[in-house]
Amino acid sequence: MEHKNMANKLFPKPQVVGTVHSVRSLKTALHLDPQAVDFFEVRVDAFVGREDEILAQLPRLKKPLIITVRDFREGGAQVITREAKGRLWKKFLPHAALIDVELISVKHLADIIGFARDAGKRIIISHHDFKSTPPLARLNAFCKSARDAGADILKVATVIQTTGDLAVLLAFQQAQKTLPLSLMGMGRFGKISRLLFAQAGSVLNYGYLDKPQVSGQWPAVLLRQRIDELLAD
Image (cartoon, rainbow, N blue to C red; front, side, top):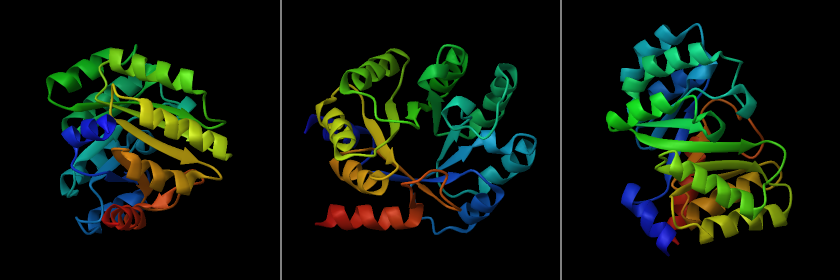
């Protein structure tokens, strides 16, 4: 399928991301078997006030980093002013292999996206819906907006409470041919969705290192094992 071919241009198989959003998860990441995950996502918004301490540890991490300063409206740990967010991005950007910027933030973070692009970083544009799964037409609109903003990957996380919600996201993944997708569910069908979407071509698949932040997440190490089992069949 074409969407899988696009994914293969970035990665040879679905990638597993371990999320670092606490001191404990950072300690876990520092001691993790390098084969257990493919990337670490550093949630900078969770370390405001301790960023210099965290920055000092990043060179010790044995995997490429996804840097995220998550907006509070989409699950960020706290409200951060636009000016403070810009300073955090500039501090952490040199450590990134990829950056993750919310679709709602692309306009006021256009300079950060430009800096990242000039520095050879890949761009994830993301959307998080903690109430529902948007209809297919809206998901397609997200993809167009993300592409126009310079995305290399569109990441979409939604609440999946019914098989209908699951079908909508799967249809989006099967039909979308303009950008590689990272798709994941939260809620009742969250865990099932993450395995399904990974096998169907989701390029980045997120798991926790410390404790889940939302329902439906897998431990990152177990997620890697389960995806590999599915791919081996």
